[in-house]
Image (cartoon, rainbow, N blue to C red; front, side, top):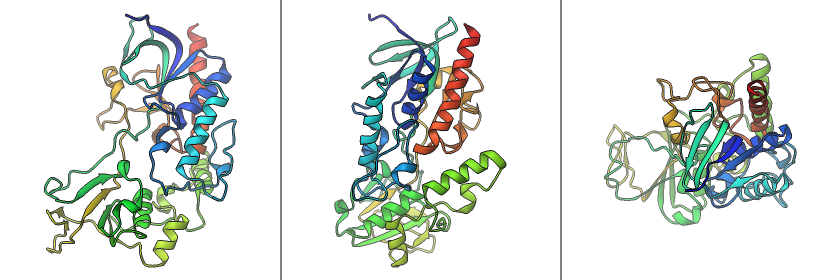
Amino acid sequence: MSAVRRVQVLVVGAGQAGLAAGYYLRRAGLDFALLDASPAPGGAWQHYWDSLRLFSPAAYASLPGRPMPAQAGQAYPDAGHVARYLAEYEKRYELPVHRPVQVQTVGDAGDGGLLVRTDDGSWHARALISATGTWSRPFVPAVLGRDVFAGRQLHTHGYRRAEDFAGQRVVVVGGGNSGAQIAADLTSHASEVRWVTRRPARFLPDEIDGRALFEIATRRVQDGGPRISDLGDIVATGAVRAARDAGRLTAHPMFDHLTAAGPAWADGTVWPADAVIWCTGFRPALAPLAALGLRGHDGRIPTDGTRARADHRVHLLGYGDWTGPASATLIGVGRTARTAVAEIAATLRTVD
């Protein structure tokens, strides 16, 4: 049996949140390692659909220390450009990423540290940053008739390109950014697209992009300004605006259930469909932490900032506003990562 490897801090996940943490851990002079389940660098960005574009120009979508270079011919970079940037970032700062490594359990080591078991041996750490994101846990609601629909069903997680649905009738479910973007994308190839949402679609003002969203999140922290959700749910990217303004992107009320032929509404209307794409979000990938018993009654791990209330050795980074304002964004995660690493460094110094 291989020996247990020991570090001061272990980061689980090497997407944008994990890399931002690694940057500040390196600057703090701590002994650390990152474990990544993916065989290649780039985080979830290497898996997104082909037409996806950032909400911001490259300069406003950067991790700490290294501005993202502009993408030739693109005002707003695509997902592949971001994945390449993350790979270069990891290399530039010589971050100690081990991959592919699947973390199985995180438990108490009995000596004040944590014992992390993986499919490639075990690690001992005095602190742990969970930065696993949500991509590996797509969520599909329990809609009546999902098991009888005769067409194809997939989640945002599995969508790649509109050409795969050429000539088809497609239902897109979800009133967020992914639903709007994928529905807009499909209008160029599918024969018909029906976009359905549980509540009326709320577009942010057209002038708002990622830069403005980050500024709003910052003001929210500083002086309790408006929340982004108060203004709307959907960033009107160029493709979304074009489809909306051309009348090709109109939200319809959510259907009642699925039949073999397609979605059906309470009034008996059935819309025959070849495919349903569920743009219904993701859940945090936190299964390895289960043995620590950190979850609250609502299923979420309560935190003070990024630190788990029930175990101060554990920090959660990049899962959304509950682990730091805008921490699920490229530009926003750096600020939260810096604070988390500062707290970890101060705790380790105190213990020493």
